[in-house]
Amino acid sequence: LGYRVPQFIGNVAHELLKQSNRKSFKSALDAGCGTGLAGRFLRPLVEGPIVGIDLSKKMLELAAQCTISKGCGLKEESNEETSERSDQKLYDHLASLDLETTTLDDLMS
Image (cartoon, rainbow, N blue to C red; front, side, top):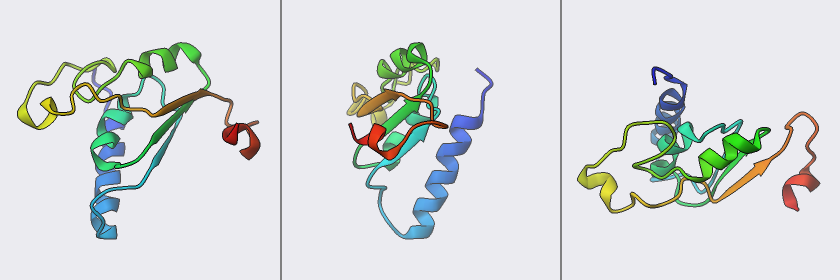
């Protein structure tokens, strides 16, 4: 895939992390997560939960299968850095919501 936005999101998040002088983010919200491509770049930067939200349940089904080294429509990676956590799911929670009409109560239930 020639789609570069997910990696761009990861690069920007990494720069923000460096500027904050922190080792990692405590959590992240991936609004419009689609198949989970950005989660692959966010997971190494987030120590806590990553929540993915998308309107499409089919996209969320694909995102639920993603790990750091496989899925998400990207080539499978196999290097030492990712092998320890290669089976770790990218998202701790996935929800099908329309962000234009979603309320805070919807997110908390």
